[in-house]
Image (tube, rainbow, N blue to C red; front, side):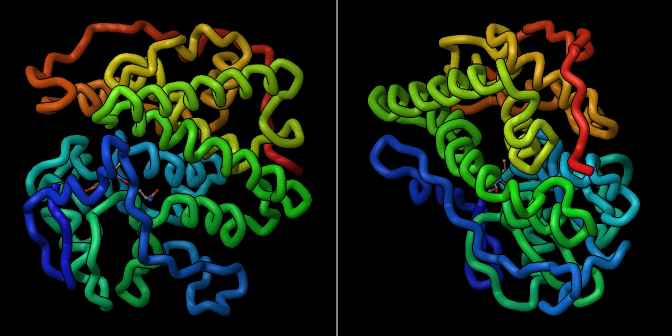
Length: 318
Ligand SMILES: N[C@@H](CCC(=O)N[C@@H](CS)C(=O)NCC(=O)O)C(=O)O
């Protein structure tokens, strides 16, 4: 894992930049153009125009893949999947097969960032949304990519209906720092205090979600919205990875009857199951790490029955 400075890739890991004291701080994304339904920004939602660079194990890429799947945009937006393990060259691709880059045939994702017309400085992260028409990165911020897919690519904006946006944004504002990123703050903490703070927030939010889902089908309006799809990647990884690898082990997701039921109901949405790769999560989160898993031994369990029946029937807003 390296960093790009002014369009040139350097293989040294800039790790300390993302740690403050014992606390993990995620760097802000900086390429943030916007696709609109009318194309007034120069980026119109033309089918076939955009390409997503993703990795199955990355939860931020997963939100974009989940949104693409639930909106049925698989034909409209093509994807390259990086190999699930990062290397000194960062995210890399095979020359052929399921982890090849069919668009540019690059060996490493940093080559895509290097092809962006404005010299880039920062970490080489997935997801990246690439515009084939103008040859540039539209965005490397998953929250923006998810919102653009929901608003510009779906004429009915079913994942983010205007009247529900304030509530969607409220859930996102709670779930991102305390849960989506909270598990990373727990897992990457380098002091007991930083870990204690993060893990307490993770479970406070899970408890709150459990209570909400005991009397609601979904987070907002009893329909599937962007807020559910931003939560889902964290839930999908929770028992298989975060519980053990990131020491988020006060409870398992399976110990929350409503939250676990809701997770399985989301999993049953057409297209979503294909974006869930537990074996890849396990291999990725338990890959050799000097701080967290020096021997790189991957645990056998847990056994998770994703298709156990659920009475919760989910649908998008109509
Ligand atoms: N803000 C970004 C964060 C994405 C991110 O941190 N992705 C990780 C993978 S899960 C990554 O590519 N990290 C590489 C690095 O930091 O060098 C987003 O949500 O799009």
